[in-house]
Image 1 (cartoon, rainbow, N blue to C red):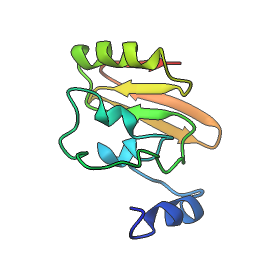
Image 2 (tube, one colour):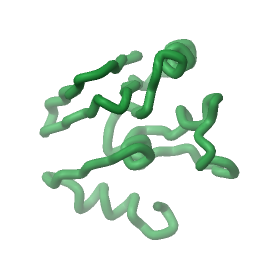
Image 3 (cartoon, rainbow, N blue to C red):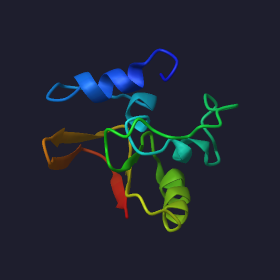
Image 4 (cartoon, rainbow, N blue to C red):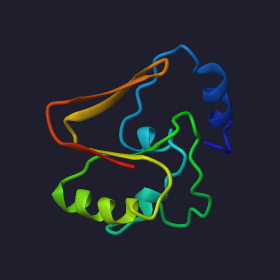
Length: 112
């Protein structure tokens, strides 16, 4: 994303537009992607040293969570200063201006 300039483009051009981030596309919008490196780590993250997110959201996101992952994240989030939304595959975050809503027919947790 940084190599292509997408990170700068989305910050500048994404205002007042619909963005649908699925899986890693949602994780990168937060302040950090460090959460993807927690065991069991995302296999797509090896070798990445800069875990800074794009920062379009003032929180972090972890999708695809099950009960085991929720437990791992709860422990990790206790040492973090940024809010984390952990979502299963039946949950999403909708942001409209300053309004944030979790839309869910499944399980999600907010750690702050």
